[in-house]
Length: 394
Image (cartoon, rainbow, N blue to C red; front, side, top):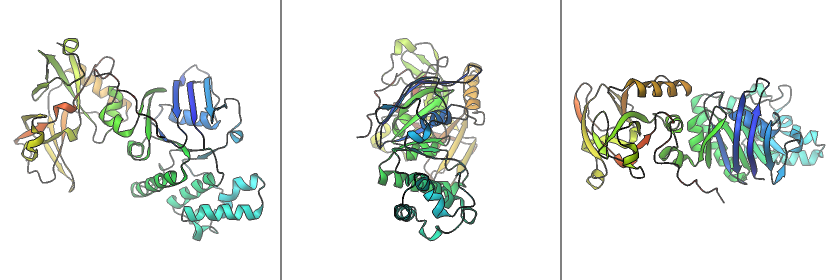
């Protein structure tokens, strides 16, 4: 195992475009680090620079304390799992897993012991004599993982390994990868555009935007304390509600109610400005289901529901509102960048499944105002500023 350190990493192509722009990131020994962001953000390019498949324009890359910028991929002692599995169709599962050991000219007995050990770990023993075409997508991905594990590499690198699987199988493989990484304790860098994978797998998550690192923190920190509008809009499903807000006399005027300004924000600095308020759907409730113990943390308001969605274990209400053109344009531009449908000016509220709120009727809602964020619509920055970064795992 080994720590991986990136210092001011830049990747420029022939036209001068910085696919990765001044990224600095320290990945601890044994840490599971996720690189996430929309298509074209530079996450796969960064991964390929770590493994040595892309040259580094400037900056320093160290693995285990050794600078490796000029080292060939085979000299970096890393193992990579690709999106398309990259298995040899004419070889059996056994020989696919054994391939890196054959290249290293290890004795047959050593090869057999290592392959069987890995096959048992990945529940592939009964498939060792099959060809890849005889396996399911999940089994083929486990073979690709087995080939990486058998190398006893210093770190594993995953490039969107689950994107070719159906939704149910992705969930199963996600659990298997997490369990496997915890068992092996190997430093892992995992690229994905799927925020569910990012939030469930990683010790920490690095969010990239157009080649620039936006925030690196634990999944909980990203969800609860995004540093800017981009992170706030990218993390969370359903997405965070981004509402027009104006601060007047130390109070925040929202489309539905006026609430206290959040702690950590200077009221004088925000006074009279048009801002963007961020509130997650889960920070709202049907007022009838709010515990008395927490009612004072928020505020009750009335609004007319346009649409409700009942999904059995969860329920959502959608409430339209009017939004100034300036804020609506900002939110629509963010939705386009995140490859999402345009965010209509509507409040998404997460309800208790037992709630009986009806479409087309006014209803009483409660909002936890202590969880609200305020963003500058021009810079996108969270007015509360950046919190202290999470400590790395021991």
